[in-house]
Length: 318
Image 1: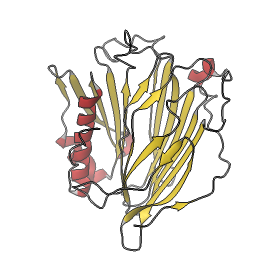
Image 2: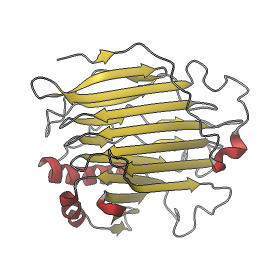
Image 3: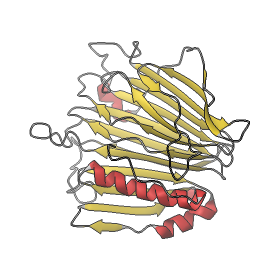
């Protein structure tokens, strides 16, 4: 098995969302470690490509603490040639002033599964915010499954993320995010007691053609989160975007049905992204387990259409 190339760290520009209107109230310099201090400026670059034997491998790896990635594994029973990589963090929860930059690239005809080793915890913040900037690039015929564990915002969390997906018309990118309402079983509960979550995702082609932009800002201090049409009686929200060749879109759409399961308190819906870019899938539930299951079932349908293989059952400890 080939080991990924490791590069010397170079100076990487610190991610900033200070110009975002919704973050203006949260620009005070942290009273503890400053923005960009060692351990608060995470950087990760993952590059997948085919080796000389035509096997997908993690060719490029560059990281900066607290982000950690180990060697790729090949444990998918249904798709044994799929390299699986888990993003880990040595720094505990995201705190005031944390900035993260992640870049995932897949060269022609390569594929990868990327997840996180555990849920991403967002600690209570007093002065500043935590920000994540992501770039996902897929060349011709590439295939990516990105299914991280849930994001858990504590009380007074401030978090903003921006993800750009640059996907070739012949490639497929499955991108999911699962958001909990907070630490549901902590004390009297912390559901929707965070300050703000701002999440933006862009889709484009390699030539720069813009396909879609989805952004949602959740501010429990300004909106009634429990209103019908927002979260109502649900506690967990999953947002999934699939960019795939045009001929795959309708078969995947037809294989999925919007539903509301009153007994399980679980609901899901699907729609088309603009410009024949792909599909948008959303799930609501009370606990992360059932929501993750529905997201994984949807991913399995996407994989069946693209690769002709289903996803195997999730590990019991996940």
